[in-house]
Image 1 (cartoon, one colour):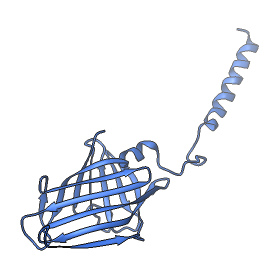
Image 2: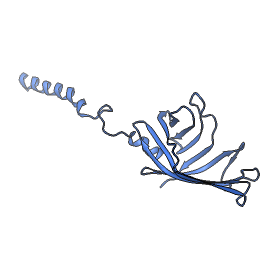
Image 3: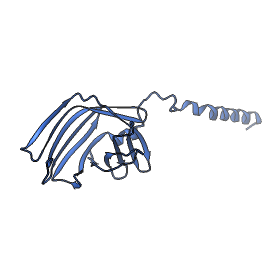
Image 4: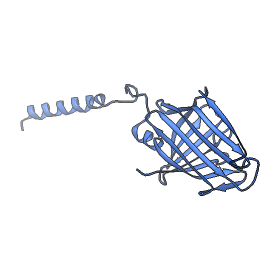
Length: 191
């Protein structure tokens, strides 16, 4: 190779290495307003309720059951619990609504929810709520092996998705954003 060819190859290499990064999409110019696919894949799917923390006890199947489903912009939750005693020993909820993504946020809300609560299945009151106005927004962060959703208002719920064990827990968070207590635990339903 002649000196002239070496110079030409060197020039092409410098030009290519200078402009190649500009050809790659960056967050600043990306058109997608959703989080990366791998983040969305954690939340979207079907989840089975495996623990319901209520009144100081942890209730498991067969005393409770439920599903949380997140697909194609829609959410649906069903939860049914029967404890042995107490004024709210029986609880049954079914709700559905919608969700949307932001760059690193997730927002959802229920359009309709039907709730039964009482001392037993026979002694309940039905509460039906239509078009709930409160859409809840959460900031998404990855912390080690967890995808964490924190209510953007700094109050409300926190969701901790365990990326290794395919589970998540949710519960109220404290002023610092830490999980104060677990309300429910879900496990991903493998398809």
